[in-house]
Length: 247
Image 1: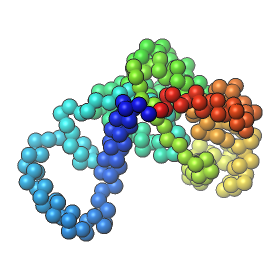
Image 2 (image 1 turned 60 degrees about the horizontal axis):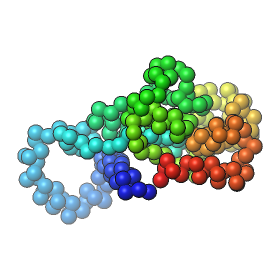
Image 3 (image 1 turned 135 degrees about the vertical axis):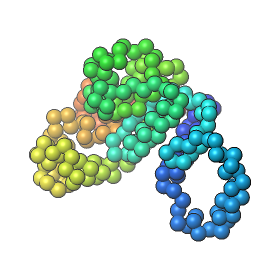
Image 4 (image 1 turned 30 degrees about the vertical axis):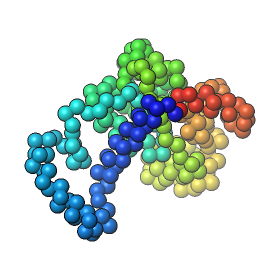
C-alpha cells in the first residue's frame, strides 16, 4: 500500500472508530473507573472554550474546515456491515460538500447487473469524472468507476466469511419476512436445507450463491456463468486484476 493510501486508510479508520464509539457511548466499565472521572474533571476547564463550537448528532466537534479526503469508491457488500460504513461515508462526504453518484431508486447502481444501470446513466449523464463518492450497491468495474469518479479515488470494501454471510442473508430476508422471501423463491419456510437448494435453481443463481464475488465483478468477467467458480487459475487471475485498485 502506498504512503498516500496508508494515510487515507488511517483517516477513514479513525473516522469510523470515532463515529462508532460515539454511537455506542462509554461502556459500563469505563463509567466506573476513577481515572476516567478524573480525566473528565480535568477537561471541564476546556468546556467554556467549546461553547461556540458546533457538534454533530453524535456529540463530535465539527471543525470549521474538516480535513480533506480523496474521492472514495466503496463497494457495498450485502450482509457484511456495509450499511454502517455507507452511512458514515455519507456524513463525511456531506460535511465536505462532496458529490455522490446516487441511484434513481436510492439503492442500486445497476445491481445485480452491470454498473451503473441504464436508468442511472439517463439520470446522471455519461461518465465525466463528476463524482466524489460511489458507495451504493453496484457490481464493480474499475474502468467505469474511475470514469465516473474524480481523479485518484480510494477504493475499499468489506468482506465476510461466506457461510456466516449466507446465514445472515437467510435470517434477514427469510425470518424477518422481507420481499415475500419464501414464496418468491419456492423455499420451504424456515428451512435452511431448502434455502441452500434454492441457490442452485434461481434465475440469477450466481448473485445468491456467491454475493461477494458478484459485487467484485467476477461474474461479469466470466460471462455470468458459475462454470469457473472452482477453477483456481482463473480465480487467481481475476483476483490479481483487483489488487492494484485495492492496494
